[in-house]
Amino acid sequence: MTTIQADEVKIMNGVTSAQFISAGIHFYPRCGYKRLSEQAIAEHLNSNLETFNRMFADKDEFVKAMLIEYSNRALGRVSFDFAQNIEDTERLYQIVWRLAVTIREHLAWIHRMLLDSEEGVDLITKALKKQHKMLACGMIQHIKACNGREDVPELALFNQFEFLNGAVISPMIMNTRYRMLGILTDEMNGRHEDLLTDSSIHQRIDWAFAALFPQYRSKARPF
Image 1 (cartoon, helix red, strand yellow):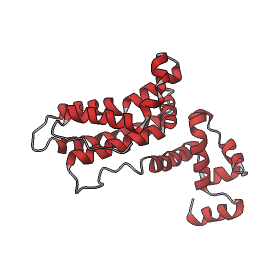
Image 2 (image 1 turned 120 degrees about the horizontal axis):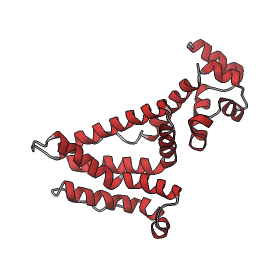
Image 3 (image 1 turned 30 degrees about the vertical axis):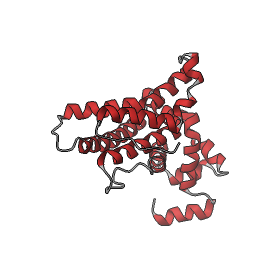
């Protein structure tokens, strides 16, 4: 579709592709890939399926555009290049913190994507793999920097990443999933929200950094 054609669609129908994408982002956590209806999205915008089909070649093209936009929104605050003037371990701390907050705010989306991937939606699996690669590679590079001049074997770097991820990020995803499945203990279920607070996240990061980078001195954090 050319730019001129896109402008004609906008003028003729009073709705833009960005609005369709935003509507898809709104519905996806509840519907998932298979139940995400082009017709329902069009009706939500007081539009029609013909308009949708003029903007997107098919459902997969729409979902790809939706995933790109959502990723840009969700991961916008997670940058591996920010504050290059600060000490390596402090920068990694800030990256892990920002990532943890982002994960916490988007748990519904993450769980829906995991379900779709498990159900064999290849498009979603590829998106998850791409995101994981980007985050893992970025964090591993910063972990390597935190080891200073020490020549750390690749396997050890991977292990450090897994330890940090398992200490800070994975509990939020797994415990939320366990809660949805009803398999958390009553005590853990009752404190689930407490484990997602800023203070609990900071505490887990502090513990992980104390184990991985003993030279790091935790700073007082405003909760």
